[in-house]
Structures are given as structure tokens and as C-alpha cells.
Image 1 (tube, rainbow, N blue to C red):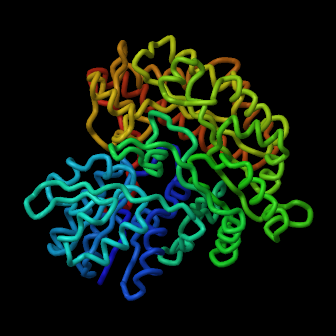
Image 2 (cartoon, helix red, strand yellow; image 1 turned 180 degrees about the vertical axis):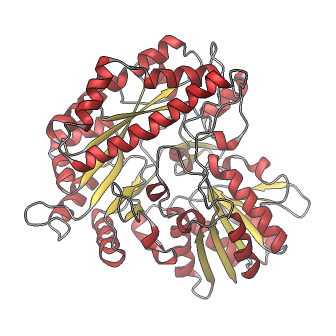
Image 3 (cartoon, helix red, strand yellow; image 1 turned 90 degrees about the vertical axis):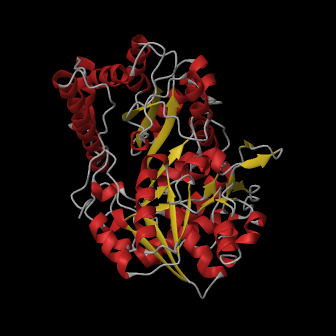
Length: 517
């Protein structure tokens, strides 16, 4: 049996350079590891087109020369159209190939995905066990209804959605991801801020149930048998997580670790145990010199808790150097509407103050969501002041994005505010939903005007963060984000001036030179 797991070509997110835009496709690596462990006779390969800079013409030639029995695809919403294009290509070149889709988009758009025959089967939720069982029964389609975690069309053409699969409770039981199936030297090559980068996870799920997020639901626990899901946070042991870091450092020369966990610091016990192992290891030199750098998404309330418990200083000494914290809003009503719990401006202010004053080597990024149904120009002006008010190093302003499967998507459809159906625009920088008073172009133009509006305070902040910054990595990261953000803002303003009648939202993602090659 010949299996190919594929990440097709795609555009570059506008706030990244190519050297740091594409991390290893960790989901595909985890699935491949499970297949190799349980089905050792299977020929399984991973092609990561963005990592290899392989465009569509080269991909077509490679697919034509490499017969496959199963093609596996896993995508988020803004890249789902690329996976569908790859599925169509594979079907044309290998008509008998089974196309299996997973990730955080396809399981929540089952009817659309299975409508035209490009995708044969959808793996829902965690993919390792479901994909292995599907391969074992590949030639026995009559038994597929008994495989938990699938969606497919049966012989009569009806869509069958099987019950969800039980979660993997013991994450230590998972195989080490199959990093050896991709060329690890390509990731982070030439990047000064993220050299030798690698994607890694220690947990799955989340402790919260934000209405705009699909990750907690994708890895949550089904309840009641009616499609309801509750948050379920699981983590590997500190020892297992440390061993993964050490192995990636020694075997693959990885230096920058991008933790993909939705909430890296949810468990104080894990954070404390992992940091202790790191500090006692050769990865931290005798004078505290870190041989690895770590970036992660944090919860503000857990930052405050861990500082009080003495855990945060250990994480920083272990190499934590860049964090992203979901501020989202400064008004309680909007936070409640977003389902963001135990999170307030005061908690976020305290978290950023702790990092700024006690751990200044950590670069802090906050995210703020705009475009809620009731948002007005005054709300956007107020939100634009949050960056200075909370004194974070950089702020990402993210339009409310209705990813399929989220409560936000359901509400947007019911209210008629969902304007754009172009999946590529669900990229967290292009508005796709109107508000009660602002259409998409109004949101976009006002947003970018606010972001580059000159002021004495803003110029003073930029000067302090660039000219007076002593830490070279912090200075480089800030210059990179400032450059990308300013470019997008200027493009938006020029579009407003020269194409005022164009009411479609703009895509600022960049097409790499190799995309069509």
C-alpha cells in the first residue's frame, strides 16, 4: 500500500517571511508516525510543498511519476481550497486513489467537502487511530460505518457520519512524530529570528470554549451523543516533552521551538516539571546560556498564577523568549459574547506588566478581535489604543473570523452578516463579516488607517522599541512585524484611494515565486 500525506503549495501569511512562515506539518507527522508503528509494511511518505518550495507544476510532475493508493490531506479553513485543488489533481492522475481529508476545516464542512467527489472520506477529530483503522479496512467499505470518527458517502450516495472516536487520553502513548520524513534542514534556514525552527506540541485541547475558536472543539470531549462538545485539556508528561525537545535538538539540530499548543501554560504542574528538566539539562549552559529558544501561546491568568508560584521565572530561564496572549477585547460584554472566560483587561495588564518588568527578554504579542456585530468606528478607535494601554510589544488586530464549526460562524450565517464565502479570506487579517453599521471595506479601511495613524506617542514607542532596545532578537522581531504591518496598511490606503468602488475584501497574503512553478 502506497500512502502519501501532502501539504500542497500555498501563499505566505503577510506577517511572515518565507524563512519562518512554514513550520513542519505536525499533524501529518503525527499521523505518519502512527501508521509506521501499527502498519510497518505500509509505504508512507510526506510531501511538504511549502517547506520544499514546490509549486503546482512540479507537484503535478511528481504525482504523475509516483503512483499512490491513498492521499491524505489536512487543512485549516484559509488553505482548504489548496487541498481541494490537490485532490482534483490526484484524482485525475490516479483515478483509483482514495482521497482522505482531515484537519480543522473538512470535518466541519462535511456536505460541502463530499459534494463533488474530490474527497472520498473525512477523518474527524484526532486522526492517528482513525486513519490507521481506515487503512486496515481500506478494501472493506461495508465495514466503514463501524469506524468511529469518519464521514463518507456510502454505496447509495448518502453521507454517513459515524460516532466520534474516544479521545487519546494518554498522550505519552503517541509515537514520536515522523520528523525524519521531511527535510528538517529547510525549516528556518536563513531566518535570524527563528533559526532551525520546529513545530512541537505537549498538549491537546483547551481549558476554555471560546466561541470563535475551533481548536478546543476539534480536540474536545463529545457529550450526549448529539454533537455537543466540552473542553478537554490533556498533556504529555514533563519527562516525555523534555525528551522530545532534547531529541529534536540533538538529532535534527533544532534551536527554535514553536509550541503549537492552544494554551502552552494551562497546566502549572507541566510547566514546572518541564522547566525543571530543561534547567537541569545541557540545553541550559552553566551560566544560564540557552541553547534553545521557545515561542508559545499563553493565557494571561496563567501568567499571573505562574509568576506567583515561581514557575514563570523557570520557564524564562529555560528559554521562553516570545509569547502571544489573547487579549481579544477590553469590554466585559464583548468578552462574554466571545466566550472568553477568566480574562479581563486588568488581568491582561498585570500579565504584560509581569513580563515587561520582570522578564524583559521575552517579546510579548497580544491579539485583539474587532468586527463584532455591534462594533462601530468608536469601538475600533478604542481598541486601537489597547496596544499602548497594555504596553505589549506588538499587537495583532484580528477580524472576527467565522471558521466552520464555531458558534461565531453559526451566528454570522443566521444574522446574514457573513459576506465573503471565499475560504482564502478566512486568514485572520481580512474581514469577512460585516457589523450592524460597517461593511467589509469600511472595516478594512478604518482598521488600517488607525494602525498607521501618526502620533507623538506612537513614534516614541517605535523609537524606544527599535533604537533603544538592547536585546538584538527583540529588536529584530519588532522591526520585522513593524515592516510587514506598515506595508499592509499602506497597501490598504492606496487601494482605498485608487479603487474606492471595489467592495471586495483584500487578501494581503503573498504568492511566493515558486507557487506556480
